[in-house]
Length: 183
Image 1: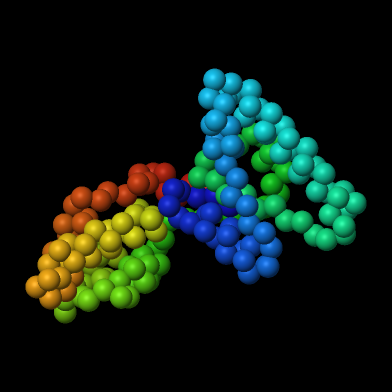
Image 2: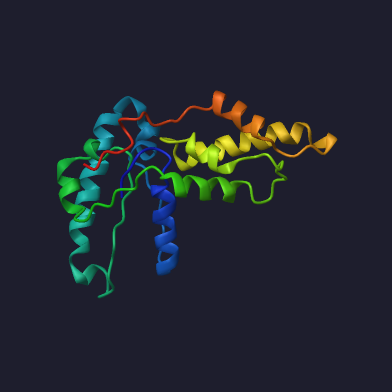
């Protein structure tokens, strides 16, 4: 699985594992190798080599007691993956930035327990957030609701102005040209 930052590849991988009743392990080569910073390049190479050996070993049914094994990987930088590893990851699933309808739904989900002013136009917020990732939308909703929380003592709900202020502060983490790549 691959896509722009904040589109939920890791969350989707975890959901798939949960639905399948399997184990989810979030393994990052950089975090695994980080403790050996002086020799990180060598350590990274060794981890990559071991990962390739283990993936090859999955094809041997004696290692899995006849049970199927599925490896699901998620990255924001597929071109940075080693070619040998990319060849072993046979299926590629692109996770795009959310479209208008998805952005609107994500905003509504983030605001389900927040008091909203009658003039708040969620559709306008969704239209103004093209190229924003799911994480970006969560941050905007959080920032706008915190503006409302500061005024909560006065019992004033979250307004459109709160969202406009949040949109001025929070820019998309993905640039317009980066969010629609399929390679």
